[in-house]
Length: 331
Image (cartoon, rainbow, N blue to C red):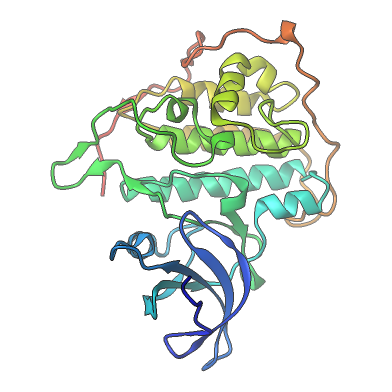
């Protein structure tokens, strides 16, 4: 077993483990030169292949975008690759549990608005993240504590071939990527993920935060097999899934289910739906990411057999509000 170094690049001292990502373990760290708090992700070297190198290259391309972590350094230390990042705050997953699974509606809408901008930025650089879930969404620290960040780009892939100026071809028969609970139905079915799949995962995150659960969660929130999660997703109608939440969130999900593989999402339209919900709720006296005064909890009622029907990959009702369009502009 590789011994974890106590210092990286001579100036970054490792502390406690903060968590783990797709491939590496994340540690708290300090820059001994300027005493900055940082995070370091370490990955053992295997066959000279580095997912952290892949993540570093992506983060450098995305640098400066909304909700994109700042990368400080990447290199090799002993038998590890190391990626040094700004230290961020807790994840939405940990915050949600710490607040008894209750967030204010304004906080949830603000989270959705910010994540939509972040995903639009990621997609504009020809990437799909691949694993949008509460554990991969972190709140900033200090002056950035009102900002949410998307982390863990270990399985991020390009969906647009810049050289050929073409969208990646439609393929199916692949394996599920990312986390089953928040993966799109098409991802479960082995279709190569695209922009629409990132956004479907985002909507599942919003529904989870609004309802404190999802119908395919077990009673104790233990992980179910991905096949069981897919079966519940397919068998749960959008009406049941979105029961008791703002209708605009339902509209977002229907729109994304109708989005074709090669079509660009209309981010402005999706953003306008979130803003419509904002307009119906009195503005809070505190900042939008203040989780201390939750609204009354919205929960899913127990699902009975009569509430279920066999779902379709694309719902039968189609939106006419916003026309769909083919991908035409990429960086």
